[in-house]
Image 1 (cartoon, rainbow, N blue to C red):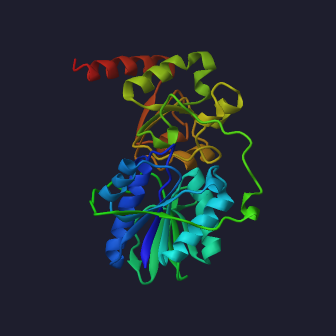
Image 2 (image 1 turned 30 degrees about the horizontal axis):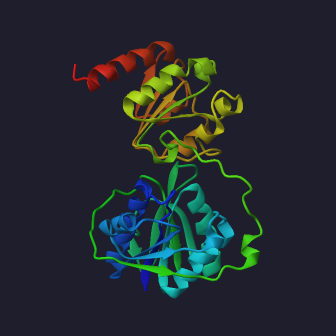
Length: 324
């Protein structure tokens, strides 16, 4: 028995969410008195693979198959399920990312496993196996008891600290059987975001809404993000209006995020938006409307005109960084 972790790589590199997931897996392995096996798909340099051992993996399985060159959820989940069976993995873990959510559900079906998406804490017990996740768009918590022999979990981003737990690792190549029926849907074109910090990986997000009145006013938002080393994002109406690209849309209908710090500037706080960002550790709202729903969810709030508050805040941040 082992804990199997699917460690997604981006062009051969692992990111913070991977190390969070391994740290989480390592603590579960201690509870179960077992080891952590990491699985990655594609070409990854040996030095990069060795970093997985720093965070608790005892074995790293590398799956290289030309049929898995393109990300197709059906073929990837089939491959992961086959590896889980070979390793006799009773717990299979994924990051609760866009791809992780797609893979976790399919893998659970193929393994006839109990499935808990978006967990946020270690299991309170292993027998029975009980995990906690948010419910009702983050307004409550639910404890799930998984009764199947195999358990599949996806871990909410930024919900578990990174823990160094260095292990002597064994790196092995493995193989699976990929059937043509798993490859019926193939991507025709893939456009990758480059040149800026990814929203899902950023520690700080500076987000703005229709309160900015137009795309020409985004300069102060980008300036603030650059000063803080943050990524920019927006509410759905802003993306729908074409003021900002849809890749920056965060919320229940966009990208679900959980940074350490989230600025909501000129965003009223519709329930769909709050549901996608309420995993943030600290939220700051800036709005002219003191009755804006976001103030109820925010840790800090400024009632004021963004066109006055943000430039003043930018100047204060620059002076702080300069040590003035």
